[in-house]
Image (cartoon, rainbow, N blue to C red; front, top):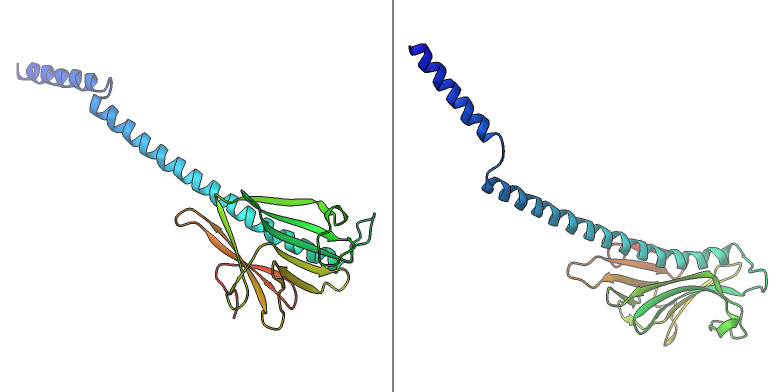
Length: 213
């Protein structure tokens, strides 16, 4: 009789256990949904931040690459084919809604001046950065502000470097480098610097200003 009682008790426990295994309670379902929602928000936030970071550094490298291209074309004595340029230049300018960086060949009648259609854009290399997302600031080596547009010229053949802002040529005697800050506007946004050394005209990216003392 005791054996029968134990068997009945075992069967009853197994029955209740099987019933419980057939599904989740409402509380369990709600907890799982809440966890999935949290994981989804975290994943979306990470994706958005990663996309913004990737876009930022792509834009930063585009600015540096444009300046380096002007220098490289000048040093290698590159020809456009239809006209021999005297020099190549990169210009950073502020528009109404964007910043623009463009690579040009100085083939016009007036040296160190963009002469409309006479000075041709090289390979249509032009980049735009929205002002509601980024800020571009330019300073000299004493950290005094310079005024856009900033235009950097490299003589074809020698690669000799000269830079101008709206006030004219930037003196090599007093300013050993020019610094361009490229910064995200949003809180805790990324900020990096492009430093162009007046002796070589070589632009370098760095995390701080100055890059080197």
